[in-house]
Length: 113
Image 1 (cartoon, rainbow, N blue to C red):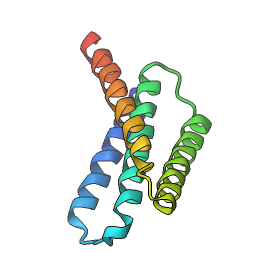
Image 2 (cartoon, one colour):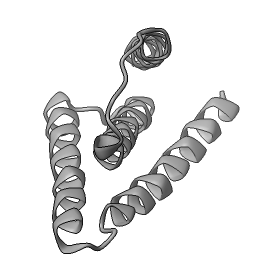
Image 3 (cartoon, helix red, strand yellow):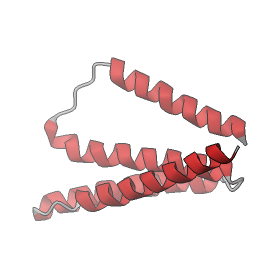
Image 4 (tube, rainbow, N blue to C red):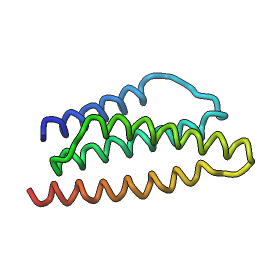
């Protein structure tokens, strides 16, 4: 269990380092899509870490959740952009709340050890 958790944390750290040092500039038109994609990915990673700590991790659930969350968030951003409504904020709020909840649960697991 802990090997998977540490691999997820290591992968997240390596991905963040690559993202910080690779000079890729995205157009501002894609800022909303990028923000919800990053939040969807972080939500999936933190959810996976939480599930790993609770011995409930399942690859199928993780992969399907990762892609379905990303597609739903991108779909909300796209539809909102077409309608002139900031629908991507719904994904930002939902993923933000889940991120903080998962982080709090992970923190409690680590403090109990």
